[in-house]
Image 1 (cartoon, protein in one colour):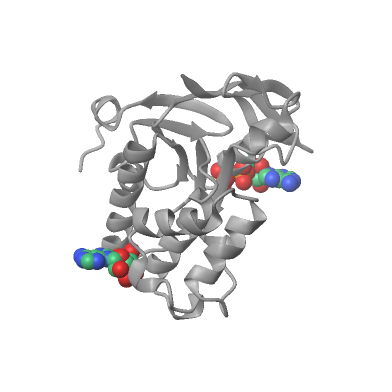
Image 2: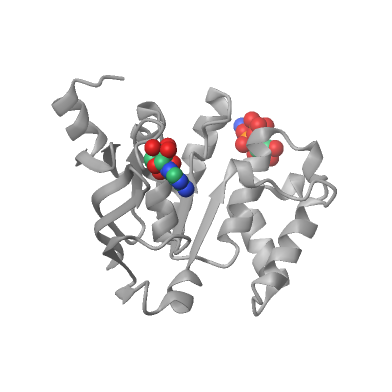
Length: 228
Ligand code: ADP
Ligand code: ADP
């Protein structure tokens, strides 16, 4: 089942062709990476997938539905997280998750908060204030918040870029486990090959608004001579 099919997306800002014909496919439970330097067009691509900006041309289909025509239904099954979004610091972790469970109108909010705390292994943090968390712990709580409504696709902008290497490795391991256990598809942007090669099933190299290569980490290492 294809979760995401983007076909020939393009977006221009003034004289800058930010995205110049990007096509992407992501399957259920798959972890896909968009890898490229700053200015390559990754964020603009994400913003089109999230319905935040309208492409000049091209189409986005998710779960078999056209985003432009079924916007509410499609976007209710997609979530987004990025470290720069932050969380309300004065609340306890459980209060944050309770609040989002209510915002999403979940049918059994209390049970769902318990499940997501178990899934992300943040039980020991439930009564801590957000402001007291380490950055790795904060990332876990952000992921809990983004997964609480059981999205079929979770889009993550540079999820481990701000973490030290060990905390980054733990978050990558967690993301792989969550994708495998829940079937949630992940689309992850990064400017760091090492970050994506450890967790992505498929990596797309983005440069100057185009995908210039794609494949598994092993295939790309063979093609480009990238080694560990
Ligand atoms: P990345 O996320 O890979 O760093 P972006 O998608 O943010 O790349 O940017 C791609 C190009 O589009 C860059 O040259 C950037 O300056 C330009 N750009 C992005 N958003 C805007 C905007 N709102 N207005 C003008 N130029 C933009
Ligand atoms: P950081 O490294 O920034 O503290 P992590 O994401 O590594 O953040 O850890 C977040 C939480 O995950 C910890 O507070 C703890 O509950 C749990 N955790 C992480 N690593 C371990 C471990 N090796 N053994 C037990 N629990 C762990």
